[in-house]
Length: 179
Image (cartoon, rainbow, N blue to C red):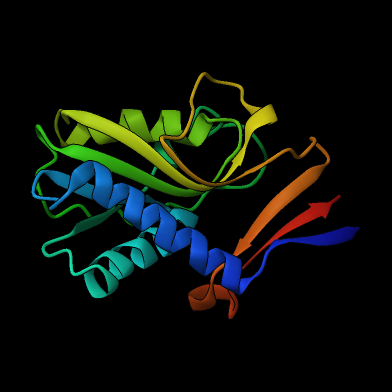
């Protein structure tokens, strides 16, 4: 199994700031925009984006939630292992809001499809956008594309993209691993 560094900590930081600036350009004061990290890996990413918006760019009142999509996945009952649900924390209204889904890697698009279904339980948003750190563009099973992307990666099916976050793995880095 071989491993290649796609992004180091400095590059991840630059991308996080670029994505935050793109969000500010589109949503300005965030008065009608909420950020929702997709469990489990998108939550680390969403927390970092929200922190950068608030601390570095002085955006006030950034609303941040996290959405568990476990039971909305189309592969929920497939496989031998039992899936463990994560928590959903959305303590604000999504009705008529602009939602930005945040996830670390966009691969087949199935997680985003599940998120689109899951969010309907909380109301009807005005608009939904997608922000991803890594876009694996040649692996899509569904017609889903990110509105904001950190880096586009052309990985083939026997390769896996792994994102490490300082808060979880002790480093900010993105790796391409060949199985």
